[in-house]
Length: 587
Image 1 (tube, rainbow, N blue to C red):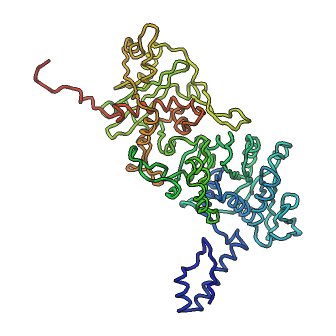
Image 2 (cartoon, rainbow, N blue to C red):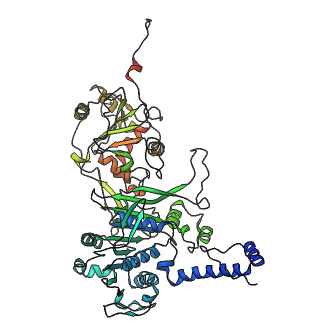
Image 3 (cartoon, rainbow, N blue to C red):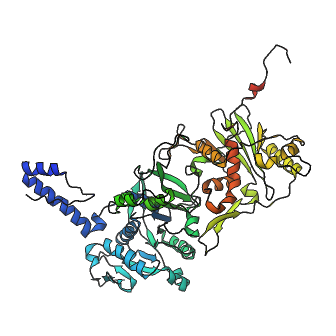
C-alpha cells in the first residue's frame, strides 16, 4: 500500500516505522490519519487567514500593536515579516468595521509583488475572486497588476460598515503631501481583541509601511492622523542593506524586554578560557520597547523575527552557506538585528529596572550604610562630566547625581543624521558640553556646592588617570593642582576601555525574562535626574568611525567607578573600620 502522507514541516507525518505499524494493525486508521493531515494542510493553503500557520514571533508583534501606537517588525532572510504584515492587515479589515487601511511600499514592483500579493493571499476565499456588492464592495485582482486601482473595498454584507484598503508608493507622498493629511486611518469601532498575560488589547492598525527608507515626513504625518481613530502604525523593515536615520532614531533609547536563545549550530557557544564567557552570544534580543511618555500607548514596540521560526525559510541551507560569516552579518541575516544602528552596548539596562524615582531613592549621605565616591572625567575642550555615587553593604550601586545635569544644562549628546543623504546616523555634542569656563578653583567650588546640597562626603575621588596626569607649563599635574586646593583625587584604573566596559556587565546582570524582585534585580540603581547618563547607557555602542563618541564621557565615569579598588569595584567601608581600638602605644 502506498504511503500517502505529505512531508510537511508543521503538520508532520508519523515516522515511517509508525506508518508501517498502522498499516499492519489498522489500515482504516491509517487512511483516516492521511485524510486528516491532508485536510489540515489544504485548509491552510485555501484559507491561510483562518487556518494558516502562525510563527512564534507573530503573537509578540500583536502584543506590541496592542500596547503601543507604533510597532516595528525587523526580519532577515525568510523572517516572515511581510507575511505577518499582510496577515495583520487582513485581520483588521475583516474584524474591524469601517477600517481604512493604507499600505506603503518603495515602488510599483514592491507594492504589487509583495504587499498586494500577500494581502490577496490572506483574503478569505470568497474575496480572492472578483467581488462586487450593492453596498459598495469591490475586489478585482490579477497576479501581474495587483488590485485594480491599487485598492479594494470589502462589503461583508452583514450590516457593518465596508472596509477599505489602498496601496501607495512613498514617492506619491513626496509628490502630494497634503493628500494624506485628510485621510483617516484604522477603525472607529475595532472589534479585534487579543489577550496577553491577562491583559486584553484591541488591535487597530491603520497603516502598514514596508521597507520605509525615507526621512520620516510621511511617518510624522501619520502620527498626527492615527489618534483620530486610536489606530496603530505597523512598519516592517529589513536591516540588511542599510539603516536609515529615521529607523535608527526609533530604535535608540529602547529597552530589551524579551530575549531568545541563539542556535549553537550558528553561534559559537563554547567558553573562552580567558574571559570565562561564551565566544558568541547565547541569547539575543527578541523584543524591545520604548515608552515616549506616561500617556497610554505612547511608545514603540519592536520584534526581531528569527529566520529559524519559519520552516520555509531554507534555514538549513542558509546555515550551510552563511554560518562562517561575521557575527554582525549572522545577526542581521538570521535574526533581523541591525549591526549598524545604535542599539546599546548594555542590552540589559532599562529605565524600568535601573532608574529610581526621587521618592524611592535612598539617602546615601548616611555613611553607616553607604560609602560615597566622586568620579571626574576631565576634558580640556569641553565641560568635565562627573558622577556622585555610593555603594551599600550589599554591593548595590546608587548613582545620585551627575554634572552637567540634563534639567539644568540640557543634553550631553544629540542624535541626528550625518552625510550621504542622511543614511549615516551619529551623535554630536549637545548643549551641556561647551565649557562654562571653570578653572581648578571653580570646579572645587562646584564640588562643594553639590556635596553640600546633598550632604555628601566622598570617601574617595577618582580622576581620569591620563587627563589628570597631564602637566601644565610649570610641570604640575592636575592631581597636584587639586591637592593644593585641599581636594585629593586618585587615578582611575589604567587598563583598557574594553576591560572596564566588560566589568560593567556585573552591575547590569539579572534574568530579564523573570519578574524583578529581591532576588532578581540589577545591582546598578540610577536617580531619575541623571538623564545624560541614562541616555548614554541606552545608546552607547562603541560604533565605528566614532559615531557615538559624544556619548562616551558618562560611560567613562561609570567604568572608572566600576574599576576602583584595583579593578574589583567599590566596597562599603563602615566609618568605624578606621577607628583604632588599640590601647598599646607605638610609633
